[in-house]
Image 1 (cartoon, rainbow, N blue to C red):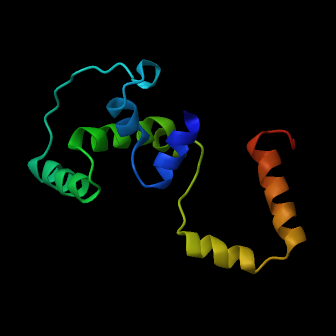
Image 2 (cartoon, rainbow, N blue to C red):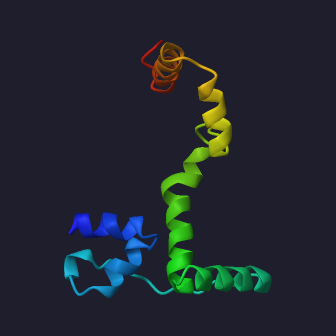
Amino acid sequence: MLNIMSHYRQWGRSTQTLQNNIGIPELRKKTVTMTFRLDEDLITTLRLESARQYISLNTMVNQIIQRYVEWDMYESRLGMVSFLRPVVVELLKQMNGQEVIALATGIGKRATNDGG
């Protein structure tokens, strides 16, 4: 079943939608109904984007919250910054293989406090 979910992700669809739409109980997640007051312009933008992606507004909001819980809330605490992919590619092109390995090794050691 995990294979189906990975293919579903590759197609650009939410695995949450897959889990909720197929009749396999172990893949269905328990949900809770909640109410929030949100800015009307924000809702309009989210509705347009969810329609563009062919997903429900509910699925989109779940994806946004899930990303926040799994990634975004830790990003600033860990001192991470975002770069556009072309920037990283160009920076790495300027280095040879040994330099990339040394950089990655040094960062890995410092990030895990093993280098210390």
